[in-house]
Image (cartoon, rainbow over all chains, first blue to last red; front, side, top):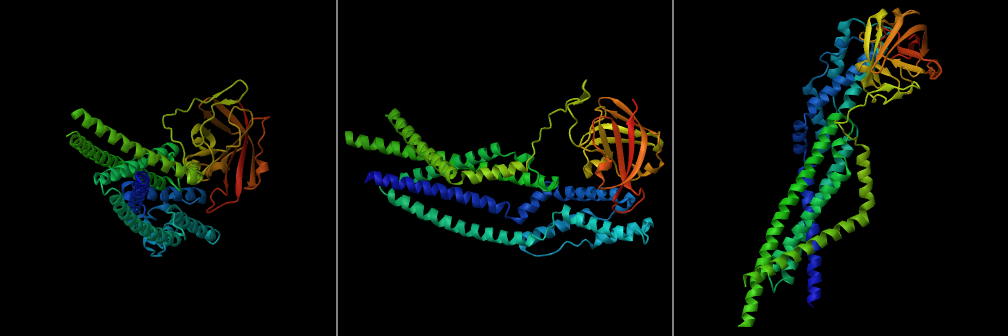
Length: 281
Length: 207
């Protein structure tokens, strides 16, 4: 009977460990990549808007050299504020499903005005100039990584957020039930509840620390390159921060777990000594 | 009595830690058995979009061997030479590579061609912009092109000029029998917009 009770307790502790890991992961994901404000904060922290603005200007220059137009044609056709505004439109499309489009008309108008000032447009080259303006506007959207898939991403985001919310509720219920069952199996020695929670926390913390170490040793996070340097820098910062958060959580949980286990051990030792003393007497 | 208490406490602590580590180990094993392949694929996918950053690695000096083959080729995207064309007052940096980023900075060296001093075809390209090769039309047969690399100085004499289509790759032949420098830019030189023609200058090694 005692063996069955111990096996049941072991299974309950294992389930509690899985639930703690799941709730930690869901909390971290929800408060980071699924949180629009967190992402905006990271974009500001990594100078994303500034970097993208520099990239936009640099990519425009590639076209101007090929076009044969004077470099002054690009003067003030786009501003940092415009870039910031458009990136925020994309974020709203992804996180709120606003379905707004980036307006390249101001860039087109400014470019047309600058080219008119250069007085180079004639009937022979007007088509080429129009093509050049079209390329510049497309280049702007491409550099901002503005795609038609933003709304599809929003739908996926909604699905993931809903699933995570349900999983979180289910996990909390599972934790409650699990703790009650541990309580029932430990009714004769209530300090074993402290041990069960301590062991679960210790298992989950060790798991989190090991997982972070495996990820950092197997993946060259700092070298990740996606789309462009500005985007890569932000992605790397976010991934590194998530790993740091998991590691910090793991260490805090480890400390709490060890304290709980020590408390249980002291209670057990004192109780056993009292029991031995009573038996001797 | 106190020792007995301590022993009991230590025993209880160690047994709890062993149980915890056993659960962690079992969990890792289960994840590895059921999702190991998927996790491995994710790691490999992330590593594919990851480039190793080793800022401390110094580029070894490029030199030319006795058999006219370079030792330690320049890194792609780095500047390794300067091209000077006195006739059009051009002195431009030459980068190994032909990306838009490279061409923005100066003259690009086609990665499929030979390097100066190797005895084969060398293909250089540059924009027809004001700062690069807009004055290419002023070049004449007999004009000199000087290329100063990190491993030596080479002077070439122009012997031909041709107007080719952008698809005429056979007009830029890669061979290793004779050292020929081919420099091209977009044509017409003052054109606005995308051009499909290229103006090529052919020069042979003088010294």
